[in-house]
Amino acid sequence: MRSRQRTGVVRIAVLTSLIVLAGAWALAHAQSPTYMHGPGARGDGGMMLSLLLRSANLTPEQEAKVRETLTARRAASGALIDQLRQAQRELADRVFAPGNLEEADLAPQLQRIASLREQLVQENARVALEVRAILTPEQLARAAQVKDRMRQLHNEMRQLMQPGRS
Image 1 (spheres, one colour):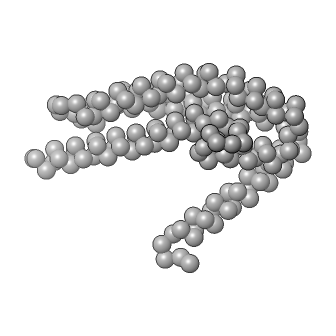
Image 2: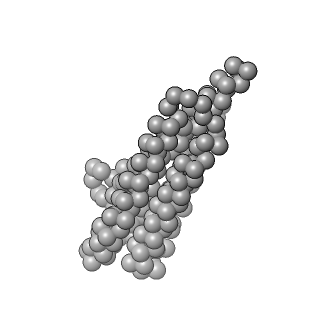
């Protein structure tokens, strides 16, 4: 019986660690400016958009519109990010609080976190659509080519890193 309890505690700890790590990763991507040329552009989500936009050779007017769009959307994303951080802190507090805890006890908090992440994904999609509308068809085609090439390079790098491959 003690082994079963220990296994349950380990499962919850691992689950929580994964949630916290995934949340930290998501927050880093959600917080990072998605169009920056210098320090502060972090995470491959923001860097990818930045590289794609740079490859599209935006005009100064387009760059201004992109910045304006990102600035306008940052407030909405910021509120969601704050809520997500709080929900993740509450989950961690609950997992490491004394007393018995079952997976079902975490379900409401996990649902809240999932809902907030979904809202962030939707907000990011809205931003992407607004930025996409700024591009000309030629710029969009160029960005698509660069995206495909970057994906190909990423896959090649992943293959090189697999054990037993050279």
